Every structure is written in C-alpha cells, then in structure tokens.
Length: 562
Image 1 (cartoon, rainbow, N blue to C red):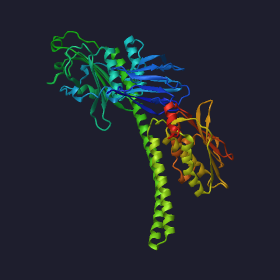
Image 2 (cartoon, helix red, strand yellow):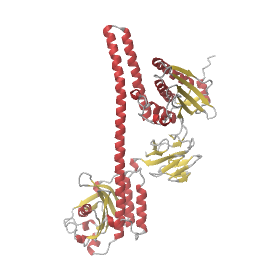
Image 3 (cartoon, rainbow, N blue to C red):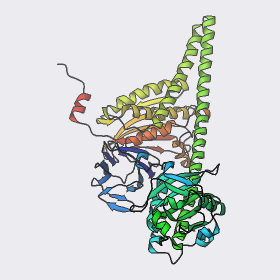
Image 4 (cartoon, helix red, strand yellow):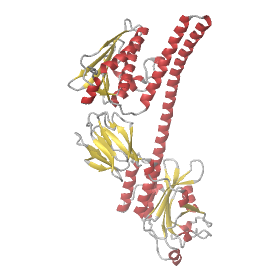
C-alpha cells in the first residue's frame, strides 16, 4: 500500500497532518464530512478530491468556487509529485510521499575504498581548484552547467524531502550535466574521520561499469586535508596508480573530487569518475571527457549542497530544542496540576481515615466528597488531553441540543452551588433537528461553563447563564455561556486558546479552551469571545446544523404505541 501525507503549512490548520493511502479516496473541503477538513472560509464545502490511479496520487477540483493551485499554477486535475505545494483558498498544503517511496540510503557495499600504494603525487593532478577560485559561477560555463546549478538550487529549496533524497537527486543531476559515468556523495563522521556513503548513482550507457565503485583514499584524503577540488589525469599515466591495487584495473579513466565546504567546516566530498576498459587504459588512447569547466560546476554544486545541509542541520537542531522545551513545559504543567489533585485526594483520604478511626460518619462523608471532586478533576484532565492530542472525525448523529445542554447544566448547577455562584439555563424553544458529535459538543460546552464558574467564584453575586439558540439565516446551532466576571482584555483573547496558557494559576491546566475550540473546528464551527474588562465575558459556540434525514427525524420523535 502506498502512503502519503498532506502537511498544512499555511492557514488556520497550520501544522495539521493528514494521512493518505492508495486504498481510499479523500475529499478536501470545509464540510464536516470531508476526510481532510480545512477551517478556511475560502475553501468550498467539497473543494477537491485525492485519489490513487494505480501509480500516482491525483488531485481533482470538484467545482470549487476559488479553484486549486499546484506550485502556483491553477489546475483542474493534476498528478502530484513529492514536495508539491497545494493552495486551496487561503490554506497551503505540502504533499509528501511516505519514507518507503523515497530512495533508500545506498548500501555501503556499493562503494569500495582503494588504498593507493603510491599515494597522490603532484604529477597525478591535472587541475586543482580552491573555493575562492570557484565563486562566482564562471561566465564561460556551458548552458548544461548553468542548468545544473539552477536545478540544484531548485532541489534544495524543497524542504519536505529526506536528506538522502536531496543528495541522490543532486548527484544524478551532476552526473548527467558533466558526462560522468558514476558518482557518490560521502559525508564525514562528525566524531571520527570515516566517510559515510549518502548517495550513489550511475549514468545509463556508461562503459566498463562494475558492481562496485572504487574510490581512491589518496584522492579523498588529499581533498579533505587541503580543502581543494581535484581533477585527476588519465589513469594510464597517473603516478599514483603504481601499487598492486591500481585503479586502472578497476576501469577508472579520470575523476573529479570536490569538497563539500560549509560555512565553517568540511562536511564531505562529491566524487565522480569516468570509466574505460583495461585495454583502452593500457593502449593510451585519449579518453578524457572531464574538463576544468566541469570541475568548477561540481565545486559550485558541492558548495551549495553543503550550505543547504548545514542550514538543515541547524533547523533540525532548533526544532529538536523547541520540541524538548515544549515537552519540558508540558511535563511541568501536568505534574503540577496532578500534584494538586493528589494532594486533594490525600486530604480527603485523611478525613475518611479519621472518620473510620473515630466512628464519625460526617468526617467520612466530608472526606469522600473531596475524593470524588478530585476524581472528577483527574478524569476531566485525561479526557481533555485525549481530545486535544488526537485528530478525529466527529461522529455525526441526530441529537436534541436542548437535551444535551440540559445534561451539562445539571452537572454545572451542582458545581456552581458549591462555589456560591448563581447558575441559570435558558433553553431556546423549537430548536430544529441537528446532526453533531454529542460527546464532543458536551465536553466543549462543559469546559467553557466550568471556566465561567471559576471566573466568578471571587465575584460578589457571581452569576453564569447558559443558553441555546439557532441562527436560521446561517443555519447554525448556537450555545452561549455568559458570566459577570472581570472580563478578558482584547489583547488576551487569542492567547487564552493557546495550550497550557491559563489565567487561573495553579487551578487551571490551560487545556480546556484549546480543546473546546478544536472540537468546534472539527464540526466546521468556531468559538467567539465577547465582552471586555468590567463587562463580563460571553463565549458563543456556533457550528453548522448538519443534514438530517427523514429517518433521523422520525427516530428522534417519541414512539406512538397506540
């Protein structure tokens, strides 16, 4: 089975990743029943489809209002390639094939290092080139050389491919551009002096190709030691091939070895050669194909590649550091909150033990009440973490919204009474049937109602009002939660939806509101905040009513047993 992913790189769903398989078609759109749902008003309800035709994933526009663009070009239907950028509405997505679809890292057995007994002497070098000599790109370069540099630059700005895929593609382009028969990319071990094979390629039609590519240790050592690119002369007259393991016997005619110099270090080498038969090498027939111009082109390509690798390594290190920082923040916040819950459980357990020792039922009941409240807190925390961590498609079923919100109101009323807060539920009359995920909407409403109660605990005559409603023009279901608390300043309204950011100190986890917004977005809806300092706060949850069939409506009605 072929797998791929769509990574959202721009838009409100930025950072979301959607899995694709060759076994299932996918629909991209704003509707809640889309496999890949984008919270984007410029995206149609069913904007485009993705299907597998047996060889490739194909994008098809489904008659969307704003169309589809791939790599900046409008398309109606397009075969997708690894790294393609899709623009739908104001959202941007990157198509990525799975790792199994990328070229695998070459087997080290394809490369054999040859220890040249004579070493590399001055007479063996036909041409050397320092980086200072190689930049800028030579004006006399052939069109093929300029095309190579352009293609290398284009390849390196594709951020979604693996490092091995980048190097393999660049090596293939380089071999084709300069007319070499085979080549490899060797990276230095950052700790030791060993070279690791990162890419290996052959040019179709090359003569005298062997199963293994011999690489001269003398050449690679010279290039790494001096930081200088080398074009070697004809193998039949090279002084370095005097040892028992002469590269002439391996079929090498000439070779280019260019250092991959980054900003501060040598990362490795590009090594390319041409081949010839043993008879041709011994006869001394002219076989040279590589030129000084080829050397300059390879040096520039190796330089660009090295700089890109360094940038990638820096970015990977930065992402890793940010990931560890986020993990540390998550662990610290959750540990602190769980510790507070466990302290509550221990306090309740202590009262229960005292009640049992003294045969005092009121202490047992008091302690059990504390334990129950903290059990609820740990349950809510775990459920919020599960809801936030997983991407899920809402399970849409016809549900009576007033009845669902009444269940939330029953739970909230008891909590409000304990906190000395006035709580009121105002259901709307004659709400139309609606399809939504009852469990998800229940959790989203409960989180916001709980926040509202906590916000007014310290307010004199604190009050919370829970309402339901229906917007007939927009065909949207509405739930509103109002309180008479201190209000939220305008500049803080976006940050309250950031995970682990809480204004309640040790009482809050900073995950309830992000979970509520995530659930509403999964339904194609939104959470709006109204009010300001000194005006109280009103959270308005709204989402599309959804389609209700005749059978759904009939199932919702009470049965007539007459």
